[in-house]
Amino acid sequence: MNARRPYKREGEEARRAALIRATLDCIAEGGPQAATVRAIALKAGVTQGLIRHYFATKEELIAAAHETLMTGLTEGSLARLDDLPADPLARLAGFIGNAVSPPVVDPRAMALWAASMQLVPRDPAMRAVHEATYLAFRDRLEAMIAQALRAAGKAPGPGESRAFAIAGNALLDGLWIEASLLPEHFTEGEMKSIAIKAFERLLDLKLPE
Image (spheres, rainbow, N blue to C red):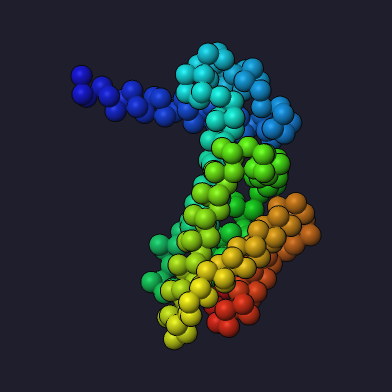
């Protein structure tokens, strides 16, 4: 009996993930209004009843899809950092570079983000997910900034790392949007270089590229 439970959980997690993928596909194709229960069921090849088994409401499913999108972007920014030298400056530079480079920079992901943003002000579930994922990214950036400043002998003052993380997050968001919308207008590695140099000025540090 106990030996079968992990298999059941894995099967349920796979179905849930498939429903989230179908939801993201529907939003990418026609915006949030296109993500009806019927359209999602057709896209996933399941019945509408199965969707309701995993998600009580359509809004809950869309919020879960937004969480998956945003968590994936954060994970993309953290990719391969463990392969870098154990140097806080190198890790911060790697995180910054990843955040404005493919596969994090992606027209589809940006379109999904933009579509979801219109729901955040009026949907409590979407706002809660967006708040949690925003703070997860910003807190990670804040910790890396604090570690980099200390490694350079610049102990951050009270609230300084937080302020740098808020400004730095906004900077990365802007570059990510432009690079995703108009990739043909930027040379390979240009956004990465711009982002790292901007953080150097913001933090008064020299970061490796």
